[in-house]
Each structure stands twice: as C-alpha cells, then as structure tokens.
Length: 135
Image (cartoon, rainbow, N blue to C red; front, side):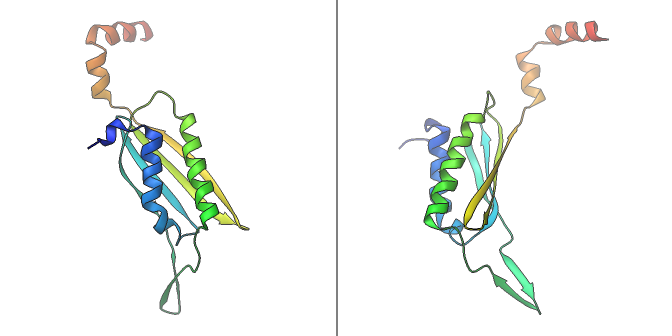
C-alpha cells in the first residue's frame, strides 16, 4: 500500500477535492483548508456557514457548486501550488463563493516554521556571531 508522503502534494490535493466533492456540491461559499507538514497533507476540511435563521427556523442554502464550478475550483487549487515556494509546513486556504454563476477563489498560502528546528540546523556559534554584528 502506498503511503501519503509518497504522493506529490498535487496528487494529495486532488484526493482532498475528490473527498470533499459531495460536500462542496451543497455549498455556494466557504473556505477549503489543507494543513501541510513535511509536504504531506494531514488535516483538511471546509469552514462554512450554510445555515440561515429566520423566525426561529434554520434553513440551509438550496444550491451548491455545479460540476463545472467544482471542476474549475479544483483546477484553480492545483494551479495555486505553483506559488508555494521552499516551505514544507503550513496551511493553504481556498476561500470560494459563487457570484453571478461564476466561482471566485482566493488562495491564501501560509508557511509555518519552527524555531527549534533552526536551533538544530544552525549551531549556537553560527547565529550568535551574526547577532554580535547587529548589536
């Protein structure tokens, strides 16, 4: 059996969209997020507010993404990976909304770094020497 870390990030993202397809078909706006660690997607999902309340009753939105809108969204998400540079840990969020029949997507790429990893990678003498030059 193939492990997740053996798949490219693009292939992993494609699998995420396949898993979320049914849920996206019931939504016309929200945020799809993927959390990445060592270039492997761990947690993913959708943040949304599909319920409206009026006069003490909750109703859900009546329409979601069409197959064409879903396909466009998936392609835009995959294309956004071209803008990910040199980081292996972080989160990508895709805010989406249907406006006048077209899907609009904003991709937010967030890199995360860990100071403990830097302390291992750069021994004390390396960074303390450069600090004395600054101060």
